[in-house]
Image (tube, rainbow, N blue to C red; front, side, top):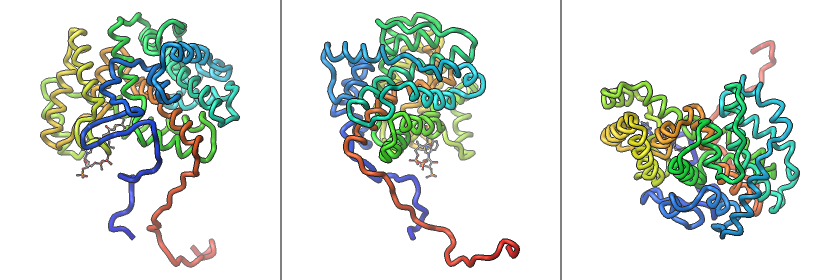
Length: 373
Ligand code: ACO
């Protein structure tokens, strides 16, 4: 038996992928060989999703074709339409999304096929559907109608308009689009791994993505961005350093810091910090940005930990007017591009994922009749 129980699969290479790559020491992230620093702010989310799912950055014709496919894919099925109001009343956002996404499979014409062409069509539909599901859930829980998505606008523009109820500025759309690009894929993170394990049983793409949504929900993964905002909201702006030190002294983890793979700055955080600063200044009240900067300094000084993707994403989404409990759903809107691409990759060259475990329980137990226990 190992000295310590085996936990967490750290440093275990669990799959081969051509989708994304991380250099944790240098703080680099690549999507299909493109440095995230080259893609962020220059490539739209739609181009990024095409890159992940189809393998190439699209030319104009390919992008137009993919964009049309996304627009067609936005139609919610009857099960969603019939149930969204009750689901929105009874379920929290990530629970609701897990349910709603699962319901969409009923109306997907390719639901029973894992063939490459069917998977590509489903990937586009799921990428198109996820932002609409979030917007429809949010509208339903407020008892209002979500504005119809505009077929001539991007996923980022439509999402902001549908969720905030306001026409976003072009710069806000650019910034949100960049957020979607930054979150689109990230090697064998927990939710992607969950999706691949599910897909490797030759289960279908919808099932794999539902597993991923359930996994993203946890506060150690996608749920951290919401927790970051809750922390900022509960700390006194004039006592940030003291509050952070007290949390650390009490053994609390500070959400939005630390990473299994990056041992230096998460390259996505570099962009998100800049966006948070810009939006904070533009809003006329950059308190949360300044508090975040101070938190970053204290956590680094005390623990040597860097902010991860979730830390500055929280204030960016806040400044964009997105409700705090939709931060993790926003993550899922973007990561849908990566999850679906990983399912395509898994199905293309499948082998069941079935690791072993180290048994640490009792041995040589003697069976005793129930009346004698
Ligand atoms: N705050 C305080 N201490 C921390 C933090 C943190 N955010 N993260 C790690 N540590 C400490 C741990 O307490 C532990 O200390 P110890 O060795 O004295 O016990 C040490 O650093 C190693 O931490 P682990 O949790 O074992 O590291 P692991 O690689 O398993 O976890 C994780 C990585 C889950 C991201 C962790 O850093 C964490 O819980 N962070 C907060 C949650 C968060 O922000 N999650 C989002 C991650 S990014 C994403 O999923 C999109």
